[in-house]
Structure formats: C-alpha cells, structure tokens
Amino acid sequence: MKYSVVDANLEGILELLKNSDKASDTWTRRASRHLESHLCDLRSREGYHSIDRYKRAIKDLNRLLEMKTAENRIRLGLGNFEHQDLAPTRSRDLIKAAENPEANPFYPYFKNRLLHLVENDQPSMVGFSLNYLSQALTTFAMIGFLRKEFPAMTLILGGGLVTSWMRRPGWQNPFKGLVDHFVAGPGEGPLLSIMGVRDTGSGEIGNLHCTPCYDPLPVKDYFAPGAILPYASSSGCYWNRCSFCPERAEGNAYVPVAIETMIADLQALVKKIQAGSDPSGRQRLEPGGDEGDRSSSSRCAMVRFCENHSPSYRSGFLFGLETIRMRDVEDRTGIWKPGCARHHAERD
Ligand code: SF4
Image (cartoon, rainbow, N blue to C red):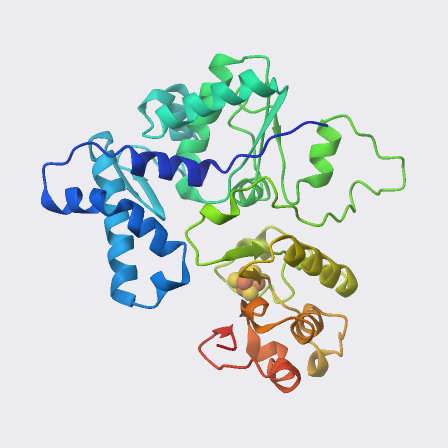
C-alpha cells in the first residue's frame, strides 16, 4: 500500500519563516537576518548552553511569525494560532475556515504542497491528525481546500482533539459533507477498516500493536537538540483522577503496552536513530510495588531500558515519579535527579 506522510506543522512554519517579507522595523529585520543561525541553535546542543541565546532565538522566530500574519487578524507563534474573529472551539467557525481556505496564512504553503502530493501520488484518501486547538482552523482550511479541488477524495479526521469531541456525551457530527470519516482514539485499526482491510474475526485489527515508525518524518528538522522519539507506553491513564483532564470524561480505558513489547519497540527505534537520540516516553507510567505489585509496568520497562543503554539514550520526561518510585531507576542505573512534579531523569 503506497502512502505519504507530511508534517504540515513543521513545513508550514518553516515556509512562513523563510518567506518573511522585507520588514520596516529593526527587530524584524534583525530576526530575519539571524533566521538560519537561530534554526541551527535550536537544532544543536550548543544552542541550549545559554538561556539568553535560546530566548532570543525563540523571540525572534515568534516575531517573524507574528509580523507575517498580523494583517490576517491572526496572532501566530511557535506554539500559538489565535484568530481574532474565528474560534477553533466553534464548529461554525471551523466550517468558515474550510469555506475560505485562501484566508489562512498557510494557504500558499498547503496549496502548493497538497497539489504536488496529489499530482505525484494520486491518493484516494487523505487523513488529518488534529491534536491541538491551535491546529484546528488550519486543518479545516486544508480540508476545505481538498474538498473543493478534489470532491471525490475520501477525507478522514482523527487525533487527540477529535477524540475529545467525539467522546463528549451527545456528540453529533457538524461537519457532514466536509469529512467522510472520523476516528476516535488509536487510528491503526479504524484506518485499515476504512481502507477495506477486513478483520478475519479474531479481532486482530482492533487489538493491533504497531511499533511506531518515524522514518517518513524529517526527524532532524525539528526544533530540538537531538531526535526525540515519542512513545506511547499506554492508551488511557492509570491515574485517571485529575479534575481538569478529559481522560475520565472520555471513558478511556487504561491499556498498557506489554513490557517486553515496549522494550523491543524502544530498542528498534533507538537503533534506527543512533546519533544523539533521546527516546522520550511521554506517557503515564503505572505505579508498581506498594500500589499492587504491578511489576509488569512501564516503570520496569524504563528501568530495564536504562540498564541496557548508554547515558545519551536515557533522557526522558517521566511523569508522576513520586508514585512510580523512581528510586528504582536511581538504585539500578544511577540516573536520579529530583525536581518538581515533572522530574527530568537525566544523568548529565
Ligand atoms: S495524570 Fe494526566 S492523563 Fe492522567 S488523569 Fe491526570 S492529567 Fe489526565
């Protein structure tokens, strides 16, 4: 099966940054002049040795994005997309964004990119992963563009934000005619079903475990000092008690990945990206020992993974360490460094 994967977030932002217009003010002109060196700083370890250098790089990139979109009544930054008239929380505004894709500041980028992809690959289906509110208006602008240009194309929408919408009690699809299929939760099984791959009756498609594959993504282009491999060690949350979190409201069951599978996945991923990679399992880690001797937990996986890998691979944000007794990691690997609620377990 032929497919292409595009990180439109990264590509769109880089395109806007590189095509900044001639500015009349000193700050923007200076930011534009230093663009390449700022990008180098954010992609190398050296750029993180000085907090002032790092802050300047971020401020300058945000300045370029802000100036590029000021006329569109949009406030854009590396982590922000705020439209003064359209709210990503209102379905009628998302439909407006889809009806008028030309008004989106990323339009020149996605128009060229999508047309080129369709011409080359002739896809019959296109899927979007929508995870954050800041992505919603642009995602719908891209959906609207494809719907207008290629009315027969099957459009699929999934991702974390869409999962939250769909798992709200009383969810009704307000995007009929725009989106053909919605996917809530992990997409592997539903996507195969939409593509016509039938379950043989054993339920294997629904319970499919896939080792993540980041090969098609431009791993070295991200704004990080090394490759960061996101790894989902579970779906749902074992804790499930924070009042502000949608996990409980969405009724997501906690399903951890088996420890041996997790270790094999991490080893395979690390092998693929050898140079300076930091596998970060940004997931809830199940408590063990005192809380029920659930020894087949991601805690044990992380301890065993750390034991078998050099320090450069052992950097990761581990959430809720008080409850998972990270002393186990310290005792057996010597990489303990206490901090606040979100401890950074790093040796260096
Ligand atoms: S630990 Fe995180 S995922 Fe779990 S309930 Fe709290 S906020 Fe949600």
